[in-house]
Amino acid sequence: MKKTYKIDVDCANCAAKMEDAARKTPGVSDCTVNFMTLKMIVSFDDGVDIPSVMQTVLKNCRRVESDCEIYF
Image 1: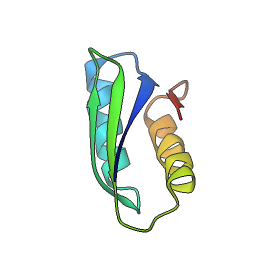
Image 2: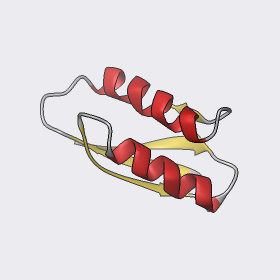
Image 3: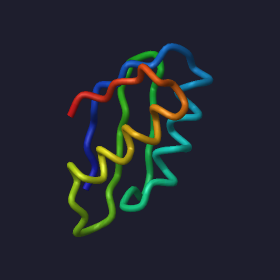
Image 4: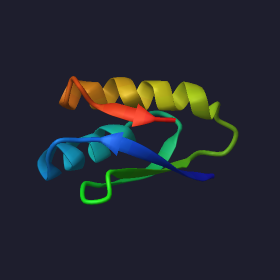
């Protein structure tokens, strides 16, 4: 399943780091962060609890940029 989220990110470099952090999250099969549109597209593994996985993605992204916000 693929979902799109609005994300607050300050720079393209941080967006790339957040994309990498999200991809390494268990339950995420792929992730793309577009700095220009402030969108994060996440593909999930089958059968995962999406809200729980997104909480972990947010936690991992906040390690890159502490004031990051993902709206889900």
